[in-house]
Image (cartoon, rainbow, N blue to C red; front, side, top):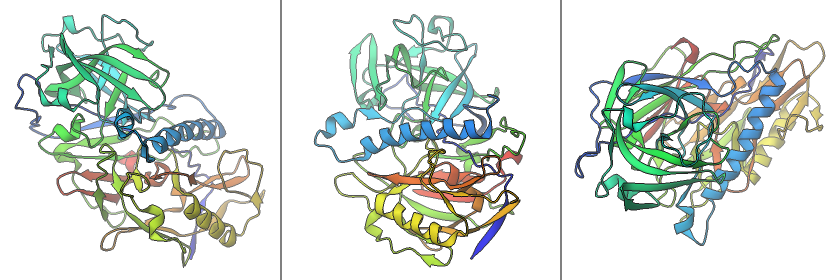
Length: 448
């Protein structure tokens, strides 16, 4: 019940988060952006071109993944003060998208985040702004800029807002970073050719914290009303994340992932395998997250004795499983992870490495002359007819010949479970908010 794969695969993959745009603004009744056609955007990993070794990329990814897990776990846990909890968002991410704002277009890079909603960038005149590579956006120089009126429904959708010189906002993230400024309407341009008018965004003139220094703002793709996907007349998006296959020489870490919006994001079954579809679940206490229902896990030929309640979304908003492009590896509820870990120890014919040097919970020592290893199959059983996701070995085992270890790319969570980015690599992940479904389509992402 296993298969082999070459050790050249070093799945140091990392999290993702994603792109955005937003709503029309000049009226209080129109808030849906009409796209004449969908568009495709290339995504750049935050460590691309950094000349890191395989081990360094892994360490950096795991560090960011643990920080994001902490923030998401706090947001997903039950809290007595739900009003306070609802004002905090996940933030941060692993991927950047190139886009332009204004007329004439001013290019910048933004962090992509599927765990929050607001799209924002730094704006002049800054009261406090962090350093960014591109020039800070100057609204005075754009003929398409206009402030969002306080009566617009998107102003009311903000967790914290006030009415001053237009709709003024404060948006806070779990790492204590914040952005403050004025909500406005602008033209955004994607892929240097698709322009979308009347996108609502935060024009931030007071931005504090360390979570956004790799970009010039953030684009949220969550489920809340402020995100791009919620404002489109075709509320659908998909992304395809490339594997980071370093090889012995470090490999091509500049391979671009892909984000598809609107009509381009539909399911196109390919030659690589079957489509797996499961239902999206809503959590009223955390409306931005994409929850899915996990029923169980099989390792090798063994369906693990994990009760379905381990992944149940509770009435107080705690528990459950989300899919997140910005979290590095999959994190499972504690007892469920222990069952997975135990079964891999039983089935892997390799000695366990207890050094803890990788930051992963379970690693094995590789033979010095190993060219490939055999690992047990792993299947995630999601809710739905024939919704069993049979993962490729490189999507859950990180094998690094130079360090002499192979590790399980999963960990333990004390709150919600998270289906992470390693497990999503080389799959088109389709979010359809009209059908309320999420689909996995095996795809060679670097060939799109």
